[in-house]
Structures are given as structure tokens and as C-alpha cells.
Picture 1 (cartoon, helix red, strand yellow):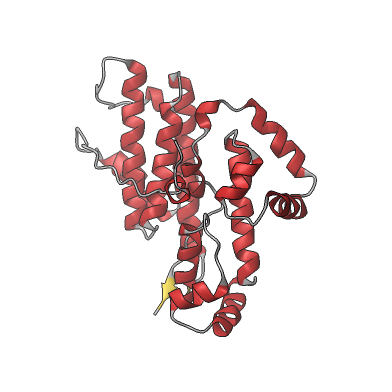
Picture 2 (spheres, rainbow, N blue to C red):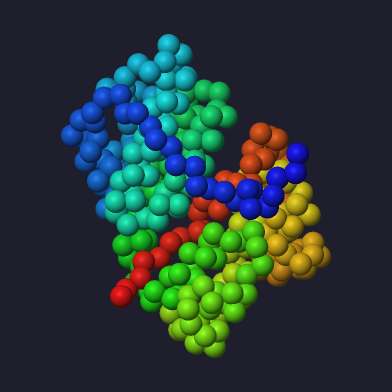
Length: 266
């Protein structure tokens, strides 16, 4: 079945989860530390194994499925607290969906327990960066959002300028001033980051990745990829051969590390 490119990057699955019991104070404190971007406290609180955590209710007769349910609840709570802290809704739920999907493929409680602190620190690190980032102007923030949501399309400066309601020339100047990089270079870097994640976390062919990310040709994609990543590209490509086919879900990749969000002023 052919799936439109747009559907490959639909990340806006907003789950409404029933929380079966009210979280106790330590749990609320933990989520607040994540929202604040307090990596040291989150690391400290994640030392306890997730599968041995006290207070987990019985949501399934299967111990493995029970832990998966609680992981899903944790992912949803992290997303909601981070949204409250300023993270973009799409980014928060994209990240939640990504980790929930990974958990769904796991066959042991040990695997899930190992993924839990990784997920928590991923959210926390992003929140820390969000709090540290200096604010950017509204036009640039609008363009960053547009780029994030349209990496599967061809993106041009005039398109972004029209979206932000300013002239292409002014956008180019403003973007370079605030981001320290040209618009075209930024777009290309984000596409390559996504391509790298797809190569590392799926077994999609290079031809599929280049088409999905709207590169004009596979040869051009390969050239740009080689130029930006150099020697590392061979190890990246080789590493993908060991990945199972079940990881072939390109709709996850915009939510992987490397796709930050920005806040704006005025």
C-alpha cells in the first residue's frame, strides 16, 4: 500500500490516557523536575529500576504488559508536564509516541526498565535546552516551526517568508543574525539529521529516505550526506543492517534528538 509522504510524518496522535490512580507526591515532584529541566535530580530519581518501582498498580495479569501500560502512562505524563513547561505540543507527543512504540516491540521487563531513564532524561534535557535558549523573534520562530513540520517537502526561502509575513530578503538577514546560519543551510542540516536517524533506526533504503525527505535525487542526497558526515557515514549505513524490520516506521523520526523547538518574544 502506498502511503502519501505527508502521512509518513504525521506525528500528531494525541492519546487520551486514563490514569487509574492519583499520583502520590514523589511522582508529582519527579515530573516537576523534568519540567524544570533538572537533569541531576532526574538522574538521581531514575536510579531505582522502573520494574522494581513501588506503587505500580495492577493493570494487567501479564507482568510484561503491566509494565508497558505504566510506561505508557509515564510517557503521557511527561508529555503533559513538558507542554505545561513550554515544550511544543507536537514535539512532546511525538516523543511520547516514539518511546511508546519502542516499548511495544520489547520482549522483557529489563528492556523496558532500561528505556525508562533514557526517555525521562530525553525529555529533561530538551526542557533544559528550552529554558537555556535565548528567545528568537516571532518570524524566525514561525519559520522554525514550519521547517520542523515540513521536512518531507521542498522548502524555500520565499515559502517561509510568505508563511512569516515578511520579505525573503529580510527573512534571510534576520534568520542568519539570530540562528548564525543561512536558511538553506539550516534546512539542509535538519534533513540530514533526520536522514541519519532513519539510517540508524530503520532499514529503509537510501533511495526511500532521499525521496521521503524531498531531495531532488538520490545522488544529490548521497553527496550532501557524505559532505556533512564524512567518514562516519559508512559506519552509520553498516549499522542499519542489524536492525529488525519492525523498526521500519519513518513517522517516528522527526521526534528523535536533534529537532529542537524555540520560543519567541513579542
